[in-house]
Amino acid sequence: MSGRLALMPSYDRETADMTISDAGEGHGSISPQWSPDGKTITVLISDTGATCLARFSARGGSPQPLFHAKSHVQAASFGRLGRRAALLVGDSTHPAEIAVLDLNRRSAPVRNTRFNDAWLKEVSVSKPSEVWFTSTGKTRVQGWVLKPPNFRPGKRYPGIVEIHGGPRAQYGYSFFHEMQLLAARGYVVFYCNPRGSQGRGRKFTTAITNAWGTVDYEDIMAGADWFFAQSYVDSHRVGVTGASYGGHMTNWIVGHTNRFKAAVTQRSVVALKSFYGTSDIGWEWHREFGGTPWQNPEGYERMSPLTYAKNVKTPLLILHNEHDYRCLIEQAEQWYTTLKMMGKRVELVRFPEEPHGLSRHGRPDRRMARLEHILRWFDKYLSRR
Image (spheres, rainbow, N blue to C red):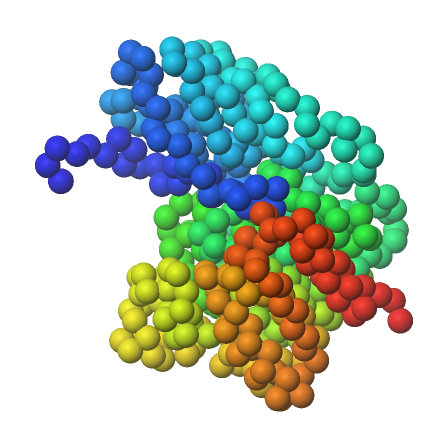
């Protein structure tokens, strides 16, 4: 287009924070920051599980991280002279704190606040181990395993597979309270970035356009295969959970396999046709689902977990929020009513007044109640009998 120049034509990572966490809203972005001399531009980059601050030449080229770390930069504010930046940054074992970065030196940011130090001394936090496994089409997929803080080699633990929302997002090097709680309760937690996730380029993230429940399902199940095979995992006591798109995939999984002993679906999507007409963003998802419901009715039917309700045998807990305008409560109601009428083991918990982001910014007592319901369900079905 006339008057425009592509500065990063060969670089296809998102210039925004696409890393999932329940310790903050995430999906933030900053305006591109020009250096005072006009020679460089600084942006956020989400890449292979990390969100970092990176700089590239105003003449074009690939951005270079301003510091190398497996961390999650959620926000940045720049000094008037362009010499320093204040970051909101954390990692897998530390909730985000404010740190100051010297933009002219290749050094780590210096932490400026210690809001979480006292709390971290009171609790046991586990460090995730990064893993890579191979899925269909020889696709390499990134994942992590989070073990209980008192993990003992030789013991077999119940497990939980977590699936992120989005789907255009990524798990990564960020503190995740829910997973830490599950690990502290004695579960080994596995999570990964299947195709459709951000952080691996355009081809990887668009692989599920008009194809939900295909290669994303294959990647999640390939990760589950790897997870089930670990000597410390009791493969007869593994559950699955996810929220939003992750809830869709949880619903999809229980309609396509009986490998999991229990499942918890959260603020999920189950019927794409009504999602299109009720969600605050549904009307624009014709780009994702191969057209509108009247243009692609077979596709909407094919990609909707509700279509496969008769196959469900896994005990399913449905958590949903009554003021969720992204995935309306009608999605949960359709799912619960259908499964209940079919005689399936299903339970629905409704949270009043809460929006889509209950797990991140809901009322504290309801955030606690949500976690207690998740633990209750998994403790019930994954405990040794």
